[in-house]
Length: 325
Image 1: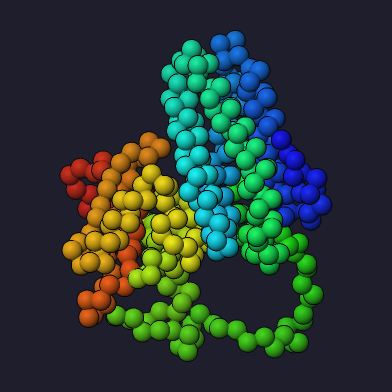
Image 2: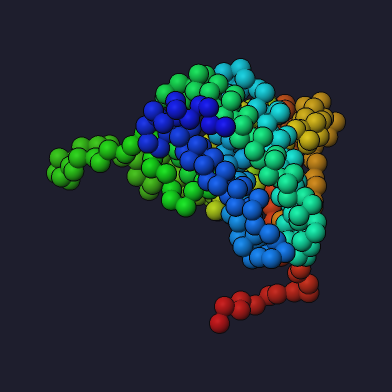
């Protein structure tokens, strides 16, 4: 394990791969603790360690949405296929153990925990032997510098947020009398565009999309993701690494065929809408796909809309008065 660590240690502070290895060290520590703890004798200790390890989901999402897209651009699609499936298998094991944890079914915990531990160990070994060495060979320094914003959006397992990469250099103070920078004012008519009905600035459009209580992802007619809205409470994680990515790489391997079928039917003009709803982390999620066509009925892409409808499903009767008091 960690045969590539000597090379990683040479990297500057905050480099994405260096951060991944800091997480690896934490994961290995947690695996040792989890292997030693006895859920029967000290369930709370086991429970705390397990929950900390379960934040490995952040690492999975960063790899899937940040690292894998760059590898695809360089022609290496293997991680988007095989390793994502590996992540999903570990997710299934974590979900199963969470069920046993809630039941305090220690016999089932003891029976299934070794599979999770060994699976994560194997994943770390593959990362160290192939994923990160190959990534360092393929990606340019400028590409690594693009990671931080997206990584921060998803989050890390670490208790302390990693330093920005590249390091932020404090800007020299400029007195207002010497500041001649041209700026677009949000109230300037020169900065507005006419839409179907009305005028808005790009900033206002961005705010509108951000505050919609629904997740939107737009895939163009070439099957490339060109937009997603950054709501504060997204149902599914997204990061800027997804922009420009083929839609077939933006879904887990086990569901990608269904997505491709929807896109094919939309392109053929045989279907215009597809929808699903299911339980996810104790919430009811409604997902809809809409074919986008221009005024000439030409296919221009697809919009995926995801919404947490748990509270909406509970509505009954009427509410016609404001009850803020």
